[in-house]
Amino acid sequence: MQIIEHFMSLSLIRTVLLTAFSFCSAARSLSTSVHLQAQAKSKKTLAKPGVKNIVLVDGVRTPFLQSGTTYADLMPHDLARAALQGLLNRTGLPKDAVDYIVYGTVIQEVKTSNVAREAALGAGFSDKTPAHTVTMACISSNQAMTTAVGLIAAGQCDAVVAGGVEFMSDVPIRHSRKMRKTMLSLNKAKTLGARLSLLGSIRLAHLSPELPAVAEFSTAETMGHSADRLAAAFGVSRLEQDEFALRSHTLAKKAQDGGMLSDVISFKVPGRDIVSKDNGIRPATMEQLAKLKPAFIKPHGTVTAANSSFLTDGASAVLIMSEEKALAMGYKPKAYLRDFVYVSQDPKDQLLLGPTYATPKVLEKSGLTLNDIDVFEFHEAFAGQIMANLKAMESDWFAQTYMGRKTKVGAPPMEKFNTWGGSLSLGHPFAATGCRLVTTVAHRLQKEGGQYGLVAACAAGGQGHAMVIEAYPQ
Image 1 (cartoon, one colour):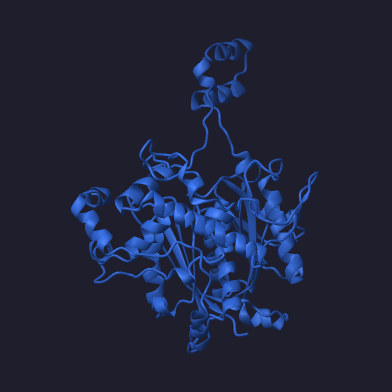
Image 2 (cartoon, helix red, strand yellow):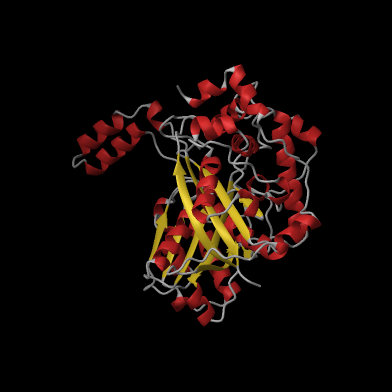
């Protein structure tokens, strides 16, 4: 029996809700006691004998902008190039010191299918520096980073640039399949009669375009629809979702005004103004949020435009090196990149539960507990998705029934969770978000004096990722 059929029975929902995580959705900064607790931790390291220490030297990103705004006339490689150039400027890295470049992207521009290579050449990297592009939905730049870690750990490279880019302002729109077949046949036709016959076969229906959708190929269900069903399964109310969305925007605005988002670089858009900050951060009131209608399941759904991440343009880039190489070049790294895992579940009913499955696995791999983590950064695809994951993590029943665990994972305390905002407010350029999460963890650990951070994210296809980041000694 599928998970949603279990959840939707009233008795099982009650079981989940009785063990569900009750959290404060109001915006709160870290308390002094938490800060002192983090500083007082034993400073054991996750370094392993005989294993290279791999470090995050620095990370940058272009401002994340709502699609159809200032970046509208660009192409994806323009944003990726800007992020790469920003990373070079920030680090002073000699271009010939980079051994390899890996970039993530989800919706590919056919003219620049290997956007990593095109962006690298545009940014002035040597044509002798290899570059390739990966795709893994919303964890594409996570995959780019762990690919970089693998190259360094294997002794193939010492310095790798990883990143991600997404450009939703100009997504590919295709002709219908029948029209495509006709056009390809026209291209091969050798006589006028054959061409005229093919042209005569075209019908009005052939001209209907195929529009891209954020939907699962295996189920044909949009991700928003899946989020709505997941929220209902875990009893996540509309009020809880709107409160979490308001928290995200409020904390993001505070972080932006306080200069915490230091990974954002200024970018001169050709023919337009210099862009220097994200433009999707818009704190509202609960009354304003309550007026919005359901976006996917109508009229009774709870997922709206305000408690969902919006379509975003943006790019990110990070410099990953072996510790030995970084120190030899005079760098002071920001963090160690430690253990990571990828998980996958049923894309129909567990599409967005990646963090719940990945978090305990990466903690066990690292020999840590939830209490050891000082900083949590989870990808916010939907407020309902975040809430459902937190409730799943607090449920012994879910752990026993679906995860093969004796007890619950436990949910992160909200005073440590996404305290500088998240994808709901900062924006979510699909393939660029992973680098933002990791860089934010590194910056928060430095700012708050913590030792360990944890990144987790869900992705299309029912996949997920988690990584442990360790602060570099100050």
